[in-house]
Length: 336
Image (cartoon, rainbow, N blue to C red; front, side):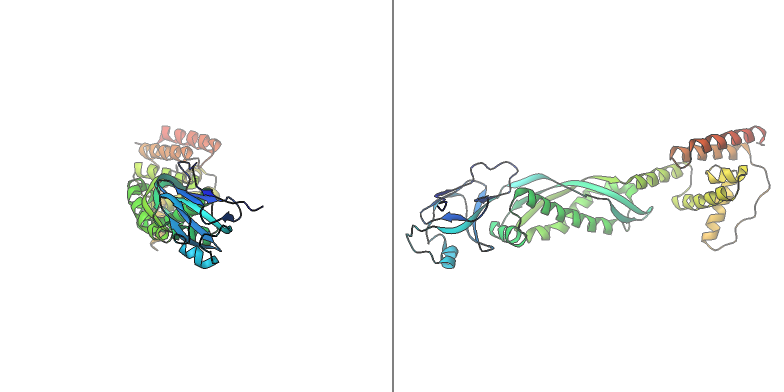
């Protein structure tokens, strides 16, 4: 026998529920004279053949051809007919939803004005309110085929993540992750402006968007730590990168104390290595190798650089101990 829905309602709406389909599966058997109960902060949308039709706001409604004009014309209802007709009803929550979560499922690779390229993940919240229930049902249920709160949450989250990636890519062309913490409020405002049109097309008002946390990948975090360390010893990041390449080359070319020291960022000729790398980058001849023995101050600086590289995990403990021993021996006989 057909299941007759004489009373259609959503009495058990939870605090996070966005939509409720009645019945949960299939089409409902509804007849004229049935009671539709729409509670505060709800709207009820009749849906048939992939399209949202008549919409009801808060109140108790007795269904008639007068208040179901679109559905009546579609299926030819007769006044006072007791014959059931198939349709679905979607109850939509019209309250404002706050503290809704979004986050990047994977790391996003974006340009960085200082570090070159960085990888990061971001998390945030947003608030929204369904302003046009009929458009919402047409676009989300009809066009996308989503009719549960979980599916809709996932869909809205994907919009936020996509637009955030676009906003972040544009911002990072002229900014750096090094000062991104100060930009989180600006990123939130930019994200809201960017995603608002997407939400409006679904019948939703995007009230607010926030970027709560930005987390660099492990490799990016190492680059940030290196950048901070280089700032502490007075070298800029590009100089460090050039010197790094020279040191690695020196480490591969020989096992002398000078070569080993250069390879670990602690070489006696570290200043010359940096100068040679920078001169090469500017297509200028490198300075001539000096035969002057290193001073105690130079060796102490080399020891400091060695500590930095070991702390950053760039050399093994075995290499660190060997180079430190050699440098300390050299320090004993070095001139002031």
